[in-house]
Length: 261
Image 1: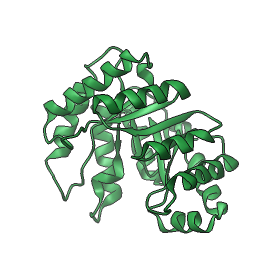
Image 2 (image 1 turned 60 degrees about the vertical axis):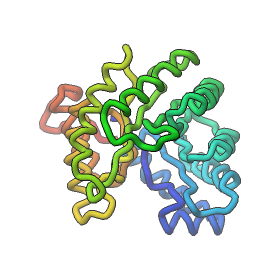
Image 3 (image 1 turned 90 degrees about the vertical axis):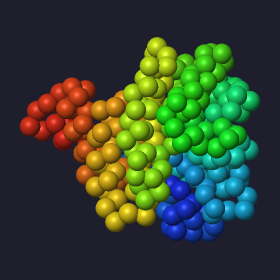
Image 4 (image 1 turned 180 degrees about the horizontal axis):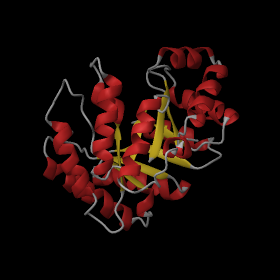
């Protein structure tokens, strides 16, 4: 399971305060804790914490790299903010994220190729987020085609079909599993499949239970990556157990301990 740790995000009050006061100690602590918890990437998102998001992104990336060598996912919907983060990257990097419009994909594929970066692509376009399986798969196929056109290794491509909150639409987690199954068929090798897992449980009281239950179902349907709370031990253990039950991990009585960092 490839995990993107979600916690270095300006939407969280402690991170927002750290960005505004340029206090790296909070960022250092979060980077270390999430790395120790098993994060594959540390997702870095300025959120609404700064008027100058480009400068804030550079500072966040630099502060994180002072503490750990864990690869970073630069997370922004603004291309200039992504580029600002890439200016100061020292280690492996992921770009999170590009929309599925052809011209947008061209720009981001070129950027990913230039920086040898992994790239998350959203199954949305100028018309917005599709409300059906077929359109999401069409956009996913367009993403895979653009990756081949730009000679970007498919192992670098992560498709995010965009997960809504349960209170917004209780039906969509079930058809999301169908989306996952079909994405696996659009190319050989197939791209990675990812979601923002915490989005599913926004506005609910049983956040951890909802997330870890869906995570297990999603792994069985082919999802191999998630932006998630890696500090939630039960959630991380659910991923380990799901992979063991799918024969991706060797079983022993200490399989959890063996798979933890």
